[in-house]
Length: 207
Image: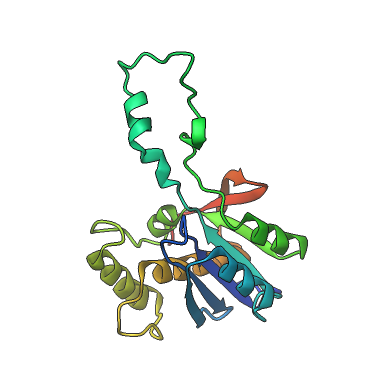
């Protein structure tokens, strides 16, 4: 039996690691109907949405975790070789080389939390596995996006999704908003860790 929630809207944010890549927002109502899908590039635009959209006031927000691709910097690979002798001049975390998670849009999340809006974070790959939306192709390729869009329509009934292929970030935002709705309905979750005081949750495998 579905739990009755006080929130009317469930917002999923697929957050990219920089303005060079698109982020997307999906707004879903309590009947799992997609109301809005929009794409952004700049953190300022994401902030503007959350501070001005009428859907935000009575919502739960789930944002994915952006990973810092600077971890793969060539200098880091060289210095991480097991035969490399590390001198006192080498600092392991210089320029945040060891950081895997990028702190982005944190001021926006703090704004929401200060206004008693529930905000959680999640790893998109864990959510895909939990919902049975397995990646049969290389992640975020055209084949993967097409397969994911078909599965969302067939398995979860999102027939309002257009026939044209959506960007990967928009598909991931749909999954994040699904998780926000399931969280409100009492889905079994567990806390993995925290990012700046906000819980990163994992979902139990979807039945």
